[in-house]
Amino acid sequence: MNLAQLISEIAAKYADKPAIIFAGKTWTYQEFDRQVQNYATSLDLLGLKKGDRVAIQLPKCIEFLFFHFAILSIGAISLPLNPDYRPEEIVYFLTDSGSSLFVTNSQLLSKVRSAIQDLTELKILLKEELLPPTEVILPKYPAGGDDIAMICYTSGTTGRCKGAAISHRNLIANMKALHKAWEWSDRDILLHVLPLFHVHGLNVAALGCLYAGATMIMFEKFEPRQVWETLAAKNCTLFMGVPTIYQRLINEWGKLESQTDLQKMRLFVCGSAPLSDQQFYQFENITGFRILERYGMTETGMNASNHIAPEHRKAKSVGFPLEGVEIRIVNPEGKDVAIAEVGEVWIRGANIFQGYWGMPDKTAESFTDGWFHTGDLGFQDPDDGNRLYLVGRAKELIITGGFNVYPKEIENVLESHESVKESAVVGLPDNDFGEKVVAAIALNEAINITPEELIAHCKIRLAAYKCPKQIFFVSELPRNAMGKIQKNILVQQVSTSL
Ligand code: AMP
Image 1 (cartoon, helix red, strand yellow):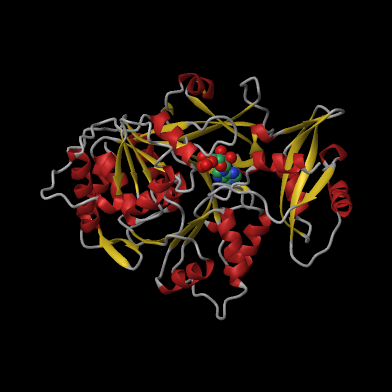
Image 2 (cartoon, helix red, strand yellow):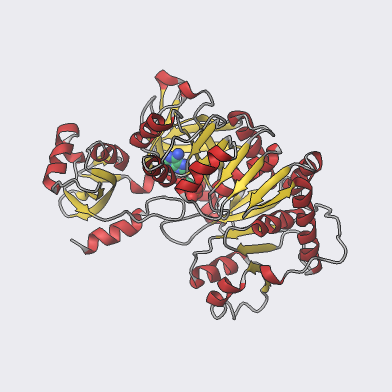
């Protein structure tokens, strides 16, 4: 089925119920659906057809959602783009996807206008210039389950960004699995502070809410105090964030004048990057809530999640495969590793994307017999129902003197020291060892420590080959919009300071 059609049917069921509250304005399900139909009509009148690609680059706004679902309604393919992308990046995404239409606003257009002037076939639609159609053409939903609904460019850290082509069926399968796992209902009220251009904010949080017939309160930007106040004042039940967001919520909690009433809250969900055990326990200590960590990626949607029952949520674990998702841990030869050993996580299921747009070779390389190679390293704990733990990206594995070092293990040890706010461990080329272990550290304020003392802290807890040979202090670690540490940038930074 077409995802937009499914959401439209849900909208009919919950017609008068608030669907989205954005910037103080409430949109009922019926109003939301009408807007989607208006926008779909406008896109239809612009001549867009099934399979055409439409790129949307907008700051977080309600119109983003109208456009997105309108694009799906007419069977076209939605391509959400980060408003922070630079002109050269935009040119690449528009060209690589062969987009017919670029939806943006005048401010963002002014930055890319000269860069895109050679794309003569490209139509441009400014959000503020879109007029409501005089007559609405009801969507016929020409695209079905197996058709591509979205192309999401991976936040790739090496080489060209790849466009993950995701079908309507992929999105719906994932949504259904999450609904079951997290027990969504139409009584839920979600506080939405994530960007809409990323799968976490769009396909998990926003889509999950609409699919449940729930209500979503959306803020353009994340502001920790506003989150604590709104969760209490608006009886929110659900919140989704990335570790950086949770860290800032923890920091803000101590500054609140009175305790926040979280009686209606049922679930704090975290993903997109590893949540440290410090963050997990600190959050539990202050709020009484155990964060539910889940694991997903652009290409796959959500793969694994901790259990809804708080007593079955564990720090540093991403839980168990979601319904319909299968997980294997394999060695570099593509064979299953021995029980509890670290290997690459391979995934199979209805949630897995259809391939990389225009890159058949990359797609072929990324699959074996229907199993998608995630590039994540992890292991399963046989004593706990094969609970999944991630230890880092395969590309970030450090091989020093022939030994494998998983950066996460070293980062955990470094972060167990009271002086360390956050850390990132990378491998740098080394004549003797092939690679050497190096750590970048952001320190907690007002605690003095030397690199040698931190290395000594590691030596007590880790085999010598795993201990950092050098430590660099930085004011903060480079992160992307989803809070993921950009280790490629870090490697450049530390290499130049050597
Ligand atoms: P993206 O495609 O931008 O969503 O990034 C996906 C990648 O984020 C995954 O392949 C993992 O490396 C990482 N990731 C997502 N969720 C988690 C998590 N809960 N813990 C650790 N890493 C995660």
